Image (cartoon, rainbow, N blue to C red; front, side, top):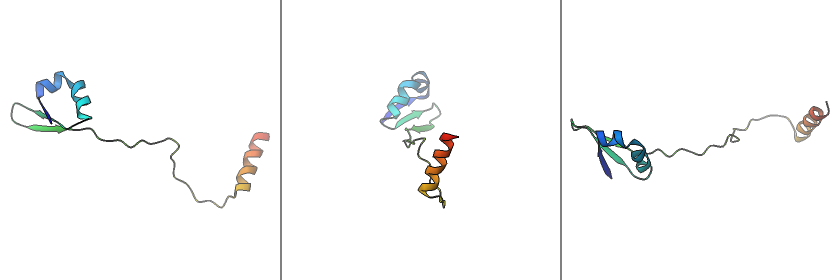
Length: 72
């Protein structure tokens, strides 16, 4: 684990954030307060990942509606 002073962290924020993606980083203030920084893993979400719905529509109903919308 890397340890930075508050001033070092402020001056090297970009480097610190890159490092925090790989390992936990500590930031120590002059008054002795210690902060821990580590990256959160975000879930990859597709815009096409939508919940399904229950319906009584059949495949034939849906295909008919699509056909009608293309002809009209």
